[in-house]
Image 1 (cartoon, rainbow, N blue to C red):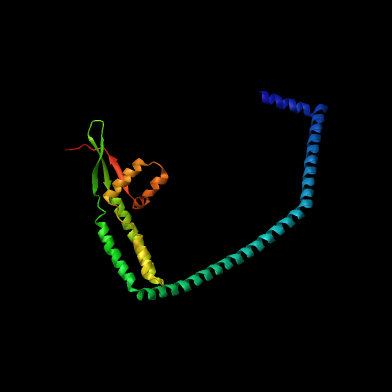
Image 2: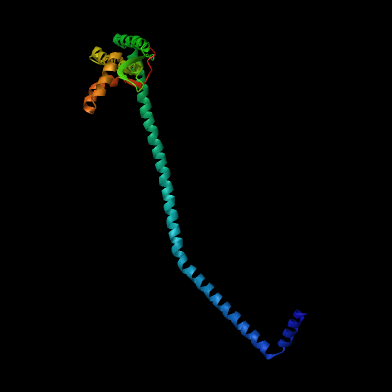
Length: 243
């Protein structure tokens, strides 16, 4: 077999000068590589020994700084918690007193406030009856392509809903007067009630729509602010005259 042949050749070469020469050269190469590796290792060890003290010092300084930072953070956290607690106690002490004062003020509130609340309740009930969706069909004087009359639809519902919103806001303002001491309470109540917008009439809606149709400029349209403030809503529909 070939393997046996190779083994035989190697056995024969062992007793020849060339074999010793090859082994000697290979051993020299190995020794040289070991010396190179050992020298590099020794140099790296020396480099570590030389540079490590500086790194140890930097690590120690960073560790001490971190420790100081942790201590400062803990102190700041405690200071913040203390400040927050004092703030909350400051508010709670005064809010408690304010609550007591407000209860006393409401208990002896002027009769005008109760009367105003009653007026607002009656006003709200009356306005609710106007908040139904009562749509009115109004002829425009125009005809569609088929020759049928065209109508516009108007509703006062949105205006009534806006009035209800204003009544609720007025009630809030009147309630706030219970904890105030005003020299002119009747005047203040009258001003609050006067600010409640009326429900726009069908005539007002029709007139406003006709005006807007004639005037395109924004400044002129702003003259309709009283009706717009009542949250007027109108929509147009082409309806067939059933008659």
